[in-house]
Length: 271
Image (tube, rainbow, N blue to C red; front, side, top):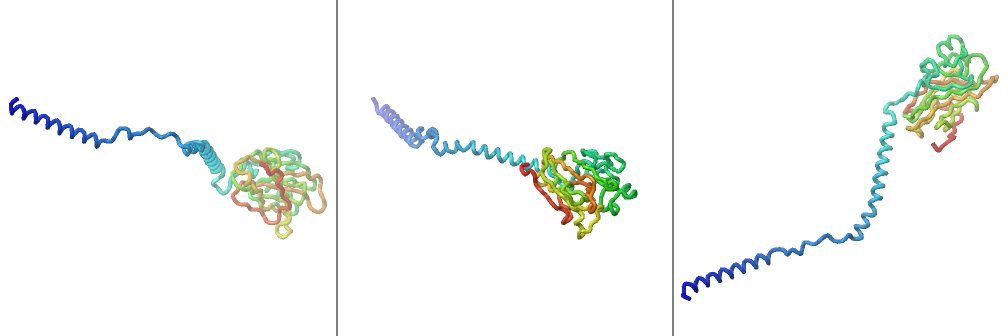
């Protein structure tokens, strides 16, 4: 083999050796493939977290129900200072929106109609003095002239409670047989007796209406009725056991005249 051929062979060997070193260096720097590991098995802590998931779901459900209840409450309560009940002032001149039983609230013409205030005052259908301090034109009363009284009830149609109070006007003698009931699901929930003679230092005429209030705040967003009860038959000689009432309206503010409530009772506190 001549010198020229030996030189070529030597050069080829050198190139091969250099290439081999470069290739080995590249593999030495590359990250080994086995460093990419599968995910570790689930740890006890991870299992513990999974067991709490249903509790979190319950909490979320409770929170959702609370939000819904708050939304229902917000939508139920009126943004206005007052909210009417159906024919609460008897402004129709009838007992529309109310149920009347017995003869107690029959008017002086023998009809199941509320009393017209102007007509009653013009025809002396009042006790002692003309009717006063009333906002509307019609009211319900067991007094239609004379001294004869009859039993009877006057019950409103159910209405949704949109305000914390039910304000109204009343004239009532002190009697265990004259009172108002707040009804829930057709049963008495709250009962209140009045003596409006106590107003004005105890010298208030029986024909003068006073401001009164029934509490509704425990019944917000529920349906209730109000019932006026007169269980009086005949008359007594000292204080005429009449009741007169009207101008019912739901309100954010109680207006009750001090001293006119003589007894109040929560009959059913499970509403």
